[in-house]
Length: 254
Image (tube, rainbow, N blue to C red; front, side, top):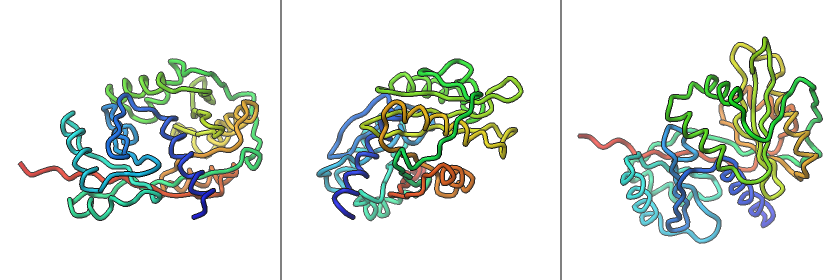
């Protein structure tokens, strides 16, 4: 890995983290312990920070104390660029889950997709939130957490939606951090898939980001999400940077 690639990877780590902020964040031995409650892993896991990090056993002890102290199961988000905990997590029985890929593209390498039916706003309206909760099958806690999260976002942001039959059928949001467009929460209602709505919504956000001055774009996609990866490839997200997965502490026998 070159110095340039390493710098880009860590810039993207920070931008994606800030694109989905957690309610509580505490630094311990070079790791950011994030906590929001609910089921969303990204805001309820330990994430590595750039630079020097502590010895694996010490890091894991600190994270376990933090999460167990708040009644949560310890969870680590482990990217390829900071995988020094893997052996120690194996020894403690932590199980892997949720393999995800980071994709990247220069803003001028992305497709130009414009559709007048795409609605864009700087804040999520109640109809946008209701559609997001419906498509994601959110429970009451996840609804509260997601509302709070969107209120914590700092910097330029946009929420986009596309309607069919007088209701929101597809949506997404983006945040610009450090010149990077971070694409988040891309969803299409199962009743309206295979109609190009995901391409229209993300394309509308890319168009907005160009005008807002973004120089590049990035996103995270679950590794086995073939339709999602095909969508992003069609838009020009053809460069894979690095992957990450989660490691969850097993339940202790009672």
